[in-house]
Image 1 (spheres, helix red, strand yellow):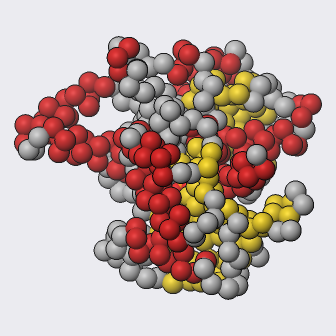
Image 2 (cartoon, helix red, strand yellow):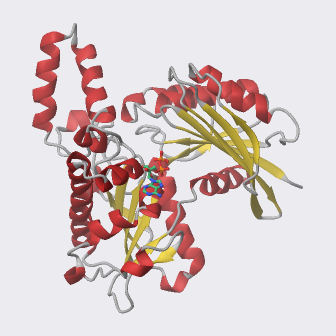
Length: 402
Ligand code: ADP
């Protein structure tokens, strides 16, 4: 019997989705798609393509809000040739301190997770909206939440606990990390590939629009760069990453003096650190690495500085996590930049030869999954695409069996 599983993965202005067919332990992708440009005054994009890459839907509708965006997805998937899902898996960045396990979604669970919207403010409101609408639009179909924070749930106390007074820690303020489904998928890829030679000291850098890096020992996360929220750690497309907290206080005082009330000032500060900073803030141009590389090619100095800062912070974290692990066996690059931008990989690893990280520049220039370290490099360096949706399908199937 086949069991179609719908995977929903929402960002602040997009909903990505895919349908997998599962039969007799085999999982195969049937289709994938996205609505992009939600809330924009310009036209958005809505597409669905089969596993063979052939476009089944390719439209540019106006998508003024989430309701419209999700109605497009649900409307299309409710009709033939698309199968009615037997289960739905939702990606969620963080469920808060009380929701740390992947599980079936109930109205009470949604309310519980909603209390911690501030822990992933760009992602959680959309995810919760979609969970509620999916329950209405696909009545009777079980919905499951799959958390990015799940991979990091057993971080050691020293990396989990933030250096703040206990009453605030008791409110749930601690390191949750993000991109956990990506990290899980890399660990599971390496375990499947060769369980005997699984790298005991592993660093994975997930470099997408949001960027994070994790130190993993024996398959278990021991540190990760994002903290309470996805704003911390590495520099991201439009987020600061780690920054002196004094900067936030300085900005907040300035904002509070001209805005009506603390909430308005905090909202504005949130916009600055999450949507206007990072690669976008430094370059003054774009959050998109591909466009930055093109601008660098044309001699744009601000774009060069933004990418230099990005690679510098990444290199610092690689060094720090090598120290955390007491040495390194494997470094994996993943995510849109990690997979596709050879220059970022080379620039981040430049000067790390004495730490055993030696790239082969010809291999680094190849496309797709590859080993990019030189023969004889003490650390193996690899590029492996993430498979978050497959991890979600795996969790959903396990939860349904239980
Ligand atoms: P998200 O976090 O939204 O899932 P992705 O993992 O798709 O993002 O990564 C998006 C980033 O990957 C963007 O900065 C984009 O420019 C970059 N990227 C994608 N393809 C390339 C490429 N060929 N060269 C350089 N950067 C690329």
